[in-house]
Length: 493
Image (cartoon, rainbow, N blue to C red):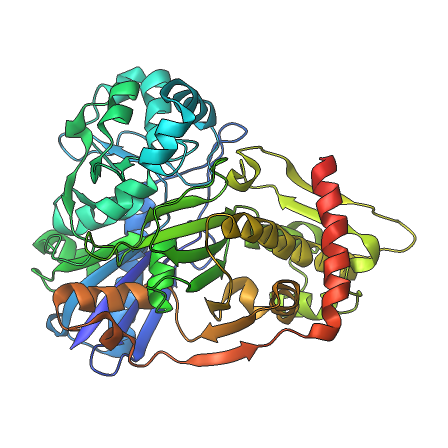
């Protein structure tokens, strides 16, 4: 018996097949092999074509089935993880009406800010735990105001994972956790936020049917099965945004536990049992995948948009793809801690929630043409990403999320020893790396939703630590000094 997980990111769609009994990943694949394009028709815009998500999901699904030589009937459930905060709108015939406005798009910030002011900061934060900011609700408001002909045709709005599941099952459904990611959820009323819908003029019928995070959410149609290489009737039994799902994949389900990821964007995600918020809404609180009314669980999320994308920009544009990412990590070690005074602010991928939705752009400060070379640029970039994450961690502490041990998958920026060491030494915490990723987490979630795993803990058979990074107390002072220089540059900006 096998479980299939999909992770719909902004760079690719990954699929992973795990053997349910052992928890072992038997095959994985991702498409496209080069990063999916993000279209930017205007400054601050970021869009993708949902049809391309589906095409790549089908390719990845067929690839893992072929790798594992598994018969379609042996796959008993599907789980989906997806890039958060995006918007897909469809008409009554399930025709996509415009490209998806994805998570790093900044156009809707004024609409969210206006709603925050009009509805009252205190009231909004008490009910939503976030300002509407740049979330899905504000993006839908932008469509309503700027593309009225399109908005008039909208029958349902969806998050990216809702769309992928709907292509599989023919059913348009969502989850409470997903709606909370879009700033549509009233935490006090435990239902969609009617006061926000009224403000924006959204009819409640635009919200899809709400299903539990772990439950059957539809079955694969015959037409979709043929494209995916799966059996008709295979149930979709789990879906979650990429960061709550990343936490699930790392067995981060209880208060005090921390998950981190550093792909295109960088995220630190902590679990709390308190429905709390940051007064400036610099970090965000959502319903965690393990949330129940009886045992509330909230995910507190810090996001830095400009993370791995900065590293890839350096490789593609400055280094002209002349060396690999692993060679870049070696190159960075040729520069000392603090990059000899060179500071990088990594905020070049849209408005940063952590900076109260400011869009600073990425920049280097203190560049000395006679002292600094490529090693300093690469090191300053990686350190700057860590410093930005640490800046947000300090905000998280203000809403009661402590930092004890950080769990992460051994992937993306966590493959860099310099990145890992900088984070461990600056925070003074142990980092545990695991043999997992978002697609594996989605597959395990599918097993929980199917009921194959009787408790969530059963789902983590086969999960183990691959590396442990302990902080070096002797090195901490140098990293703290470098962080203070970085902080001064940020404040000056």
